[in-house]
Length: 82
Image 1 (cartoon, rainbow, N blue to C red):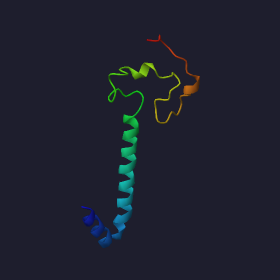
Image 2 (image 1 turned 135 degrees about the vertical axis):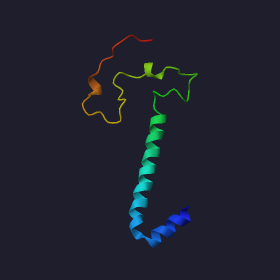
Image 3 (image 1 turned 90 degrees about the horizontal axis):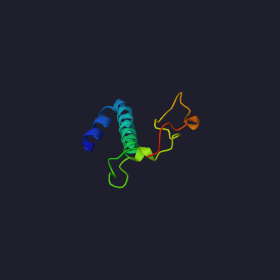
Image 4 (image 1 turned 90 degrees about the vertical axis):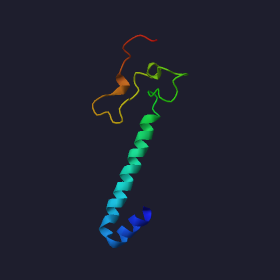
């Protein structure tokens, strides 16, 4: 498959940027999925030791990747500790 890509790139040099950006997009998507899967609020990997990890997070923990309007530093915890 790689041999075919190289042959196509030699025959049609306009495809080189497309291959480059496609590779960058796939790499970025892979790293982002790994980041999401290893988050502290994911219970999929360790269900026995920490079945409810979201209870141990600080109320100022930023859940979103980019928070546009929310200032997580000034949030207060609402609800009891379990």
